[in-house]
Length: 180
View 1 (tube, one colour):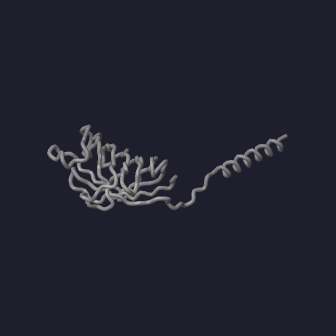
View 2: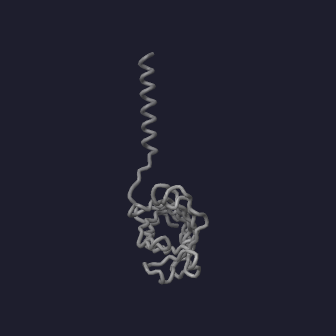
View 3: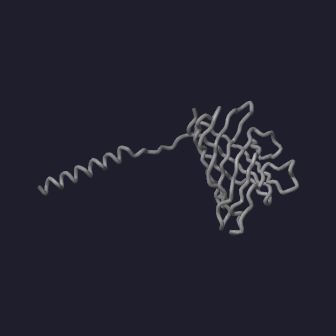
């Protein structure tokens, strides 16, 4: 009886191990189906530049820390193919970010890139944490419409310039891995 118990236990472990190995999905490196670089230009309203501002603070920062903790910004920012603010926009980034860390700069973004040009029509939906002290940061592409229907991928952000509290530019390296 004891030998049968060990055999059944061994058989159960072997089947469970094989099942776990068989269901484990192996990830292989994949080339993007679409990739391009855009520049995100954010000009925060400072109380006097309503004509040029593309974003506005809608919730004040709290007194918890010195890193804008709690501040919420809504934006409608131009996206260009080069780093010049006055270049023709190829899309608009529309959404919000808020500062969510008390002891260093960190923001969380959720926005839609709205394309309406001769090259692209549709949207890309992007969200995730912008770990600002890092040289590059990745956000997720979680969907899209039109030319980007149901797209999935990664946006790698890199701060291109920072001019005080009222203007910054991000280089966005967009790589889509699911394209329909």
